[in-house]
Image (cartoon, rainbow, N blue to C red; front, side, top):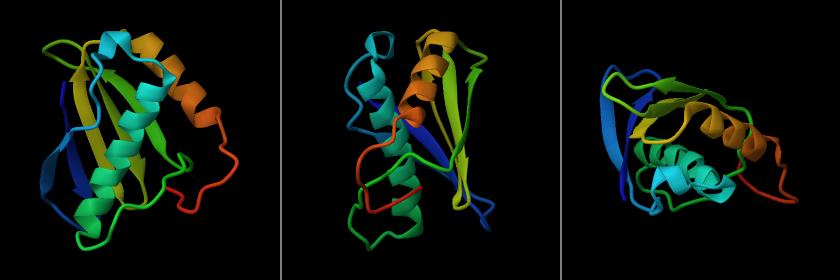
Length: 118
């Protein structure tokens, strides 16, 4: 499975679509680790657009605003916003409430160490 993410960087009036290739499991089978991966990949897509020549950096999921919204044609989308810009991924065929619960758990978990914060 591959997922799409639309990214808008602050100061730009153009959106760019990227593919979240590391997301492999079907959304209806997601667990917290899969949700963490989706959020991290959304942030990585934003970072790659803003810093195309830099290598990947570790990510700590802090300081982002998020929402899960129904998609008109079915499923839900995940929208996140940080000072760098915004990203919307999906649609995903997963229960909205279940996804919101997993995102809340993932964001509440604080890893012991990380060098990059988004």
